[in-house]
View 1 (tube, rainbow, N blue to C red):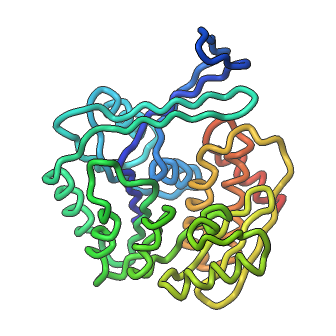
View 2 (cartoon, helix red, strand yellow; view 1 turned 90 degrees about the vertical axis):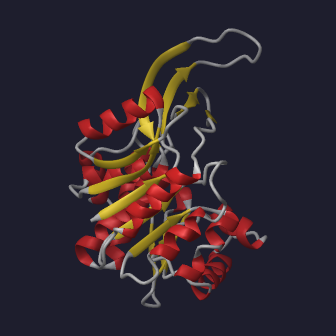
Amino acid sequence: MIYTITLNPSIDYVLQTGSITLGKTNRSLSEEYYIGGKGINVSCILTELGINSTVLGFIAGFTGDEIEQKLKEKGICSDLIRLKKGTSRINIKLRSDSETEINAQGPDIDPDELEILYEKISAVSDDDTLIIAGNIPKTLPVDTYEMILKKLANKKVRTVVDASGELLLKCLPYRPFLIKPNKQELSELFDTDADNYTVIEKLARRLIHMGAQNVLVSLGAEGALLFADDGSTYQTGVIKEKVLSTVGAGDSMVAGFIAGFEKTHDHRYALRLGTACANATAFSQSLASKEKIYEIFGKL
């Protein structure tokens, strides 16, 4: 079983607008909303690829009800913890000439509610996969990801950490199966400009030395690089189409890579499927459909 953790899921309210004038009344051209959060995005793409997963995390209030209902409608299993107070967040996505995001903080999570999550994670079994994605909410301890990984340290669980900065570095001693920094995140991790292959490889190998098993570096319009646990390096390009939205593209890459690796245990295939998922989402108004993913996959 694949488990995804979204500590702070959301409803993403997408407003298509013309030009925006601050301090004035602006009107939308269209509105849509989607359930969001990085782990949920991963589960949605896994479902498109025909792979079951279970969503773990926290929900609250009427927005939490909607998140749970939408997961059910998509056929995604959820084992979310309902908080005693607050409401799950609503994030605003403004799309005009450029994309602007306003992400809310989300509800408070009490220590006893966090313990319930730890209990669920302790029940994860050998050969399962656990994907942790996104930031830690402000009311949770900064070592929450480390505690999650620590509870799995004596099990044969494949773990994925999609995080950045110090949060990612502190997870490396627990030897995550996969991490996915982009060029900017690599630069920020080591205060070095990761502007060419030589530097990117040096920094990725450093992350492997620190504990990561596989380092997937997304290069945006230049494709992706995988520095694998077999010592090899794999690279893939991109398909040239009009980018409609970058929201969820990184999450889609994680989902595609894990789906591809679980199916074939082949790094090259996993990277190709991950790249196809990322591209397909970027070329869509929301997360990619199965049809779009395999259309792109056939062109890579």
